[in-house]
Length: 192
Image (cartoon, rainbow, N blue to C red; front, side, top):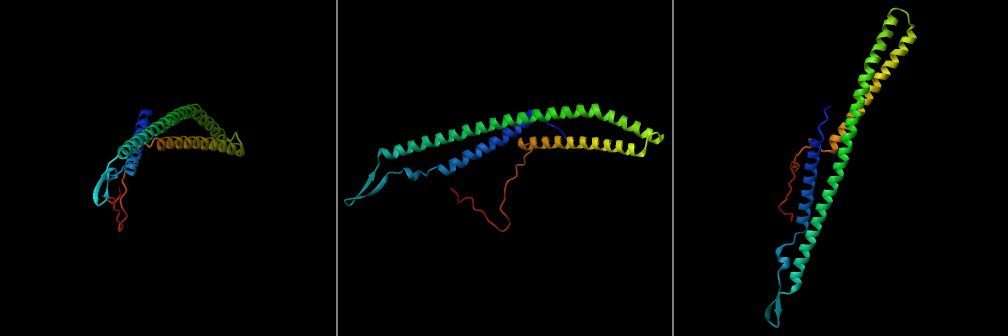
C-alpha cells in the first residue's frame, strides 16, 4: 500500500472534474444550438407578390438566445467549479485522515508487536520448561492470535480507507472509450 502525495490525488481529481465540466458544456451547447435557418426572415406571398418580412423580433430572438446560452453556460461553469472545490475539500480531508491513521497504526505496531512477541516467547519458554500448565499456555496463545487478528483487521480497515481515497480521487482512472457491440451499428452522425 503506497499512499501518494496529496498533489498527485488533486491532479487526478482535477482531470476528472475538467473532463466532466467539458462534457457538460459540450452537451448543453449541442442540445441548445439553433440552426441558422431559425433566424431567417419570413418569406411569403401577399396580394400575389412575394414578401419578405424582417422585423426586430428576429434580432431580439437572436439576442435572447445568446444571453440565455451564456447564462446557462456560466451556470454550468459555476456549478462545475463549486462541485470541484467541494470534492477537493473532501479529498484533502480524506487524505489527512488516512495519513493520521497510517501514522497511528505504525506507532501501535512498533510499540506493541515487539512486546507481544517477547511475552509469547517467555510463555513458550516457560511452557517448554514445564513450568506452565497446557491450559494457561493455550489461553496465552489464543490471546496472541487475537492480537495478531486485531492488527490484521486494523490493516484491512486502513487499506480500505486508502482504496476509497484513491477511488474518490479517480486516481489512475482508465480512459477507455466505448465501442459498439459486435453486430450492432451506432450512427452518431445523425445526431444533432
